[in-house]
Each structure stands twice: as structure tokens, then as C-alpha cells.
Image (cartoon, rainbow, N blue to C red):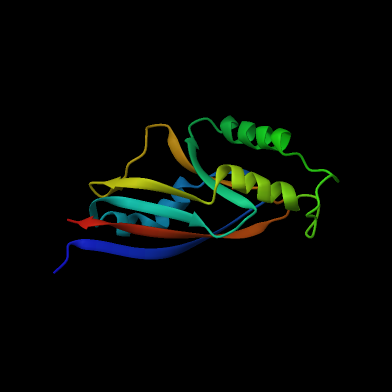
Length: 144
């Protein structure tokens, strides 16, 4: 009998443009599965191309505003993009997603996700209108 465990769960969240700390939202859905793992990982894959997921300092909420403002300065909206099928935030959203990325992997140690003291899971929504986002969580590792 194998001591290896793997499961996938879908998590659905909705946001308007901005950067959000979603650590507690994720843990509500996956903590029962994570508790079964002595050592392993959780991979969170955001199934969209106009939002991103990352790990960042999550103690001070102003970090979320700074991140959003910085990304808007680096990749501004404007009429100079070719890809505008869904509006002026279309191409900038995809570019920002490519910069930050659609997935993260976090270690699991002794039944808990193992991040630094100030780290949190951050979802960056780049579209202006409210969007529903799906995150596929793959939890795997050696069981207790």
C-alpha cells in the first residue's frame, strides 16, 4: 500500500481589478487535505490568462496597492495594443499575467503549508470588471 497521496480541488473566487490576499480563502478549501501530508507540496494553478497568482508580503495591505499601481505603470492601458478584443484592459492583462505567472508551488511540512512569517498567497486580477476565477489546487506528498 502506497504512502503517497495526491488530490485536486477547484477553488472559485471573484474579484475586480486589484491585488488580493487569498491565503485564508485557499486554506478554507484545502486545509483538510494538507493535514494528511507529512511532507509534500501544494501547487496552485490559476486557469486564466488575465489574472496571476504569486506569494508576497501580506502583513501590510498597502503592499497590494503598491503592486497594483506598479504593474499599471509598467504595463499601462492604452490604444497602442493590437489585441483589444475585450477592451482596453485586454492586452495589458495578458502581459501582466505573463510577467507574474499563473501558478505557484508551496511546500507542505507536518500537515501545514510552509511559508515565511510575512508571506501570503496573492491573486492579482487585471481585468476592470468583476471576474470569477478558478484555481486548481494539486496537493501531493507523503502521508502520515
